Image (cartoon, rainbow, N blue to C red):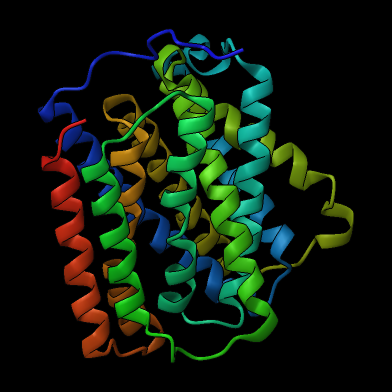
Length: 293
């Protein structure tokens, strides 16, 4: 049975612009987190890193409870959806780290950029959202920019290409689940519960995945957890401001962060094609903000 009730407020152009900007900042935080996990994954188990990343998120939020209110973080109307979001978060973390162990940042993100298209389709089916034809055009233009940036001749990663594809699907599901309950859930509760359930899930594998780390590596993981916590809070706020069809495609801006951090941290020099593709992606984002419906 279809649900034709209105799902949240009507979004003005100002809200749409703010939602898109929040998602852009969130994507830069996500790339920073992934860069840290890429560094640590060379020496440590992927599930252990996912556990540690969520552990710090839960600890940070628990430390803030006396100031922000425990009820704001613990009360939820949708515990099952929160658990599903936690599972999707584990999936995105594990699959992206597995991909980054063998692939450069830019190539990994090029494949995961199919997530907005998947999220838009899922939002149409499950949330009743109907993006206009013009927004579909801009989404496809943005995806085309990604193809220009990475080119069909990008390094062949063989079976590892499955991991970013799986990450894209998990990420799209996470976006739609977030959008589905963001209108009547406290953002801090959404942030706490997704980290809590992800921590529970990854704790099940802890006896087999535990890996001893140096103090400096724990420090890096703590910083990464901070980036992840901030990114998810911004993501939740973005989905409260604007439709999925506008917010999700802003993930395309990760190509800019991937170029910058790939060069600074891993010595990956972006090509002219990558820069041209990034320009197309930015243009598509502006077009999405300006388009209506």
